[in-house]
View 1 (cartoon, rainbow, N blue to C red):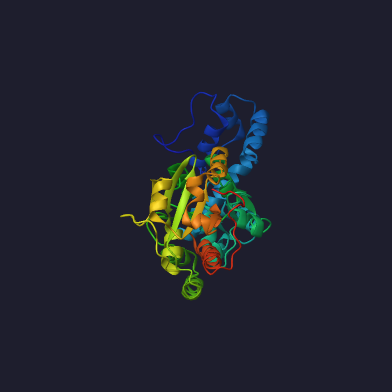
View 2 (cartoon, rainbow, N blue to C red; view 1 turned 90 degrees about the vertical axis):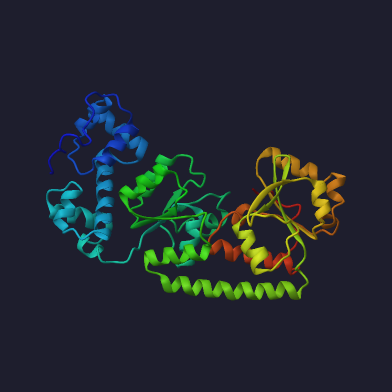
Length: 394
C-alpha cells in the first residue's frame, strides 16, 4: 500500500468522536491512503465492530467496501481523462499492486481497466429529470436518475424497472443521493451547473462529470453538448431534425384548425395568480405553434402577479393553468371556479380552459419538448378532451 501523506496534507484527526458522515467525507478525501478500520473507528470513538455496523447502516456498505467503491470510481476517471500508465493509476487510487487493482476493477465492472480506458462511456447517470430526458432522446437509458411517482411520473411509469438506481426527485438529502450516484458505478454523470456546489464537487471527485449551464442554453444546444460528451452526435442531429419536422407539422395543423387564438398561461400558487412563461412554454406554444400571447411582457420568460380584473381586460380566448399541488392552493382552485369574476371570463364561458400538469411542462429537455408539443397540438386542434376539472398539478 502507499505511504501516508506528507505533513501539511489531510491528516487524521488527533481525537475521536467524529460523526459517521465526517468519517465518510474523510474516506472520500483520503481514498489513496491506507485506512484501517481500527483507525477509522478510533476517530469515531467506537469499537471496530460497532463502527462497521453503524457505517453500513448509514451508507449500505461496509467501510472497506465503501473505500473500494470510491477508489474504483476515481480510477475510472483517471482512465478516461488522463494518460497515466496503469501502475500509476493503481498507486494514485491506493493500490501498490497493479495486478490486484486490475482484478478488483474487473470484478466490479466486468472488464479490465486496460479495456475500459478506450471504450465509449456506457453507464451514464442523470442528476436531474431534465438530463434524463436528454439522455433518452439520445437513445441512452441512464443507470441512475430521479424517479418519483408524482414529480417525474412519465419516467417513473415508463422506466421504473429499467433504471437501476432511483434518486429522490426532491433532492432533499444531498449526501445520500451523491452516495447513490457513486455506488451506481456510472462512467459519467450528467447534471446542471445549478446543482448545489457540494453535489458537483463530490461527483467530480468520483466520476467523469458534465454540468450544463441550465439557465443559459436552449434544449437543442444542451443536447448537442451532451451528445459530444458521450459520442452520440448523430443521434442528437437525428432527434433535432425529427422534432423540427414534427413542430412544423403541429404548427400547420393548429393554424388549419383555427387554433391560433390569444392564449394566456396562468400559474396559481396559494391565493395568487401569476402570468407565467417558462422556456418550454415559450418554445412550444409561442414558438412551434405560433400562438399569439395575450400577455405582453418585456421579458421573454416571466412569472408576474396578475389579478382577475387584469385577466378579464386581457380577454384571452384560451387559458392554460399550472396549479401548485399544496393543500392551500388546491382549496383556492376549488373556490376560484365558483367565483363570478372567474366564471365571467370569456375563456371560461367558452370552456377553453386546460389544467396543465407539471410533468412535462416544468421540464426543459428534448423528451419533454416532444411531449409538450404533442399535448399542445391536441389541445389547440380541438382533439383533446377538456381536463379542466381533472387532477391538480404543480
